Length: 427
Image (spheres, rainbow, N blue to C red):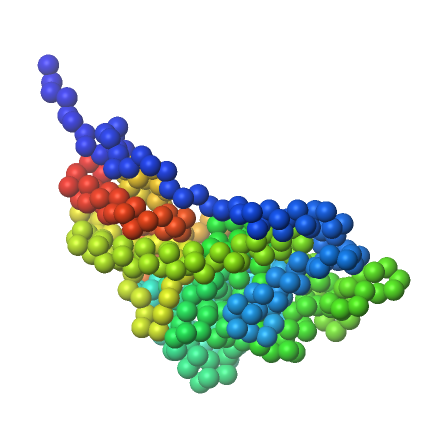
């Protein structure tokens, strides 16, 4: 009778490293529930409804989020995608214009450029941070470039110092996509406050969430006025309700906009969540720094190298690169699956680079093909981005909820990586 081969990894039925539950996300708090109930009972569930005695939560969140970031103005939006769209429109970007976009990012960064009829110019990333490569951005500048759209990704930031220098040299404005970087600090200043505009998402997975929602922040008053109209069908906010119908969004008509307004219910959730943000950011950052240190000893795991200017990272997704030769060059998905089984925690590869993403297919939508040359401009198929492709092939990602746990919980993650190292032939 043939001997039964013993398997040692949980993915094959062996006991896992950990059975204990991890922190869940999002986290409902009494403050959040109180804010939401206040809106439900107020009789006004949207900014475009008639005024009521209760304060408007959308306006209060705009004030508090601007203050948190140390800027003058904040315009909330329905989601992060619409925040990017109105940021581009506020700079009058449109047909014939080019916007430089990192190829490793969520699809909305590039699709927002398409939705203002401009052309996304995809560029490769920095190997250390996985954010926009400044050298690649510089090489992509043409006479048609109207903005550089830098994304602060995962738990790092794009090189702000070098990007601001490039912006000054070329006169091309910088827009920050800070959807994954709420509260990150670069030399004492918050992500999203360096460029002409900073755009945020508050979707459920984000470190500050309202379920859905977005915002654009700026210090420029003219830009702020344009942003208001662009997100509210050419209407602006007024303090005194209109006598006729009690409305506080009134027609201005300086620039035609669309309806991207944040609901009062989503604003209420955000107001309930914002007071917890700093403590959560500190806890995640401390756990990530500890994990960086101890994982280096595992051998086949390489944490991201943080740029010198990044004073405090916002951990949205924690990423490490693995040496897959340790596992016979097996796909990174198998390593992620094995880690998940050991820890009862989701691990996954980075998003695919946009030129390989099923979500980024501009040629599939006739809306974007409004001129004969557009197909050639927008076809991502022939493009190659070796750094981003390597990041996707070798990156292992974990959501930030796990980093609200304790330092000893981080030791479980290390133990799982060590176990995979011992039984690499079973992956």
